[in-house]
Length: 478
Image (tube, rainbow, N blue to C red; front, side):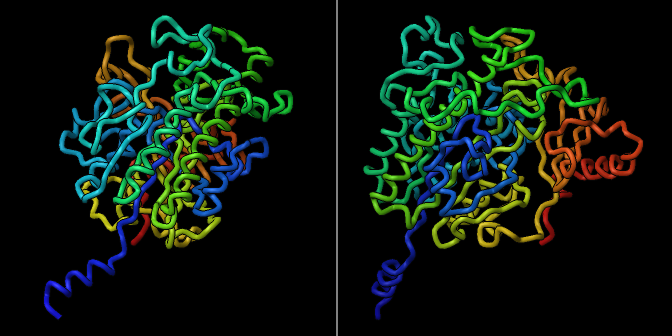
């Protein structure tokens, strides 16, 4: 056989490159059927979970969409990229970073972005990551409503926190994202691709077609079990800013009535069901086009969201409700169908995992580690021993200020989640101002801060040492 014939034969028998369908969902809690929620209506996400692995304890690096996504997409932690707000590009601090989709682009993949993958602003988007310009990725408040009465005259004014409208799915931005994603799959099906599909719901405002509201009985939906602040909580634990209260039809301060809380809970559930339906349309197209057998599907919520836990309605904390988010991975030939993993994983681990699944060499400076071994064996016992998140106070800079203004004289909260505990330090510069310690074995809702309890002095000292060792000290033994 000639060399040319040999090479042609080798190429013909090579396994084709795995595609990646990368689905980001804004403000999505693990309030899904596949995570055990009895009230959720998420059949399409649940079906994806039945084909792959559900990570039950996955944590973002900062509970705010811009920083969380920038960290995940660079594989670097917030302090490395210097992104803590919605106005700062990671390329200011790390201009030569190779993003996750950019790695695929450099390795011969076609990369496209429909909807919100990066934060969705001119500053935080990253044109270098995509083969073609992003679409439907910059969404204003006007874009979030179907009813003219709710659309503000100015794009970013917040009017109604909820909307129930008798309209088609495509009357809302996520319906149009799903329609575009299906058409894109049909167009790029014959080449290796990395397709980012960003769904904005259930981000506020909680808007969805009426049929998704009809799935729920508002009176039966449970409210938060821990509606008050944690006992002895740090003064920095809950931000002064409440996202829900920033909308015109909710009180700016004081108690929120039970009727309004139930309205918000109903809206969140309806918006989640709507997001699930949009995702289902894309997954159905993947199957119909014969692409499912060679496509890695990753679905993640960029962070959690407080639905009244600790009296808060929003993100921006270091508590479990804000830092824990859904992560589901289906990798044909690798994942065990219906797998469930309780090991600790972080969003910075997604980048090296996807690179490994697709046979790509990631940059050497990534700050996560591939969880591919957990996809093969979800019950594996030896793994990283802690997950790390952070959040600054003040939670957001004042108008016209940048990330730098948060750090000058501000406080940064660093929180560490182990198998059984959560430990948080609130620091100004290097000085620790306040600490928090929560025992998830006895107090999974994080209602009692044990940091000042003398009975837990040894545990507190141990956690201080582990925090000082940082994420490198928590890595699994190889």
